Image 1 (spheres, rainbow, N blue to C red):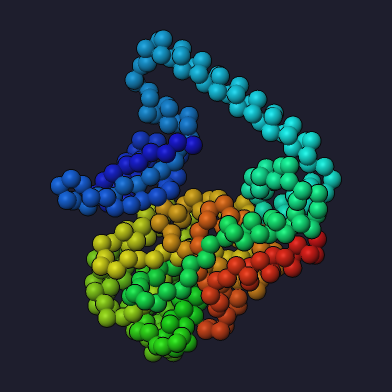
Image 2: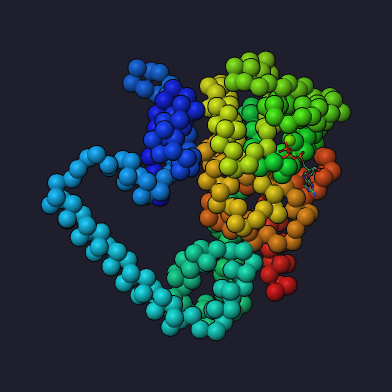
Length: 360
Ligand SMILES: Nc1nc2c(ncn2[C@@H]2O[C@H](COP(=O)(O)OP(=O)(O)OP(=O)(O)O)[C@@H](O)[C@H]2O)c(=O)[nH]1
Ligand SMILES: [Mg+2]
């Protein structure tokens, strides 16, 4: 995959430039605001595109001198030969060491959802160590490595906050907003002034769902459907300690909704917007990469995991965090508002994962 950036006055136009150049074969991975020399704010969108398509579109029409072309081909062939030799060396190294119990432990973690490539790195660091001789020691070592790699975002109420929840449809964004609102307004060491802002203009009843919770808790709530109204809303609510922003659920493949949401994320607001990706603990292994690649376009700060009560298999989720290193902020463990919410902790996740490992 190749990366390329496009710059325009807004994220949509920058993305359209990419689509115009490559057609549909691009994946959005990041967007940020940059300041031009003349002080104007511009948006820089980064996409990935297949190497072949990149070469076809970017290098076509720029004929290389024949000699340079030949040298490039030679270099590529040498590189690919080197790569082949390296991979043979690597597998030979492991073939010698990877006897019985090592294979067994590795297979167990893979079966529980941890990626082979992550485990390979951990095992590679152990070559020659006596930890490899003792199964129990090896399992503890891997769990420690997992523990060390996981990141938690500490709850910090020192500054005023705008917290936006984004994520696939039906994962529990609105329910979690209600739980967070109750927590901040009523359940912490002191009451914080909380307001809700709804950006979901797609789903019928989205406004009513949020308004229902807001009314019960007697919390201010607004609904807006464009960036100007969003800025006005934030201005109107500027005296509040926490503004929780609910968004429309979107499939990771719904580029239009993603682009619309990125426009909100990039709104020039006085307060930094913390974007939380909401993921269900039941998320499928096969969907993980697509979810990350597409949602990371929204400059994610942290991860909220919901529906812990619906599965006992947490390996896929752990794997997601090991590979992408997003800090976790909260866990939702049931449908009850406000009770079924926990501040994220490694201990909770690892205890549940170990329970699953013990079963086989
Ligand atoms: N079992 C369980 N159900 C949950 C949890 N969190 C939310 N739900 C349920 O999941 C369903 C969808 O919740 P919503 O909060 O509407 O999800 P959403 O992400 O806002 O949905 P969209 O706005 O349509 O994308 C509801 O039935 C919730 O009660 C949880 O932690 N565990
Ligand atoms: Mg919702």
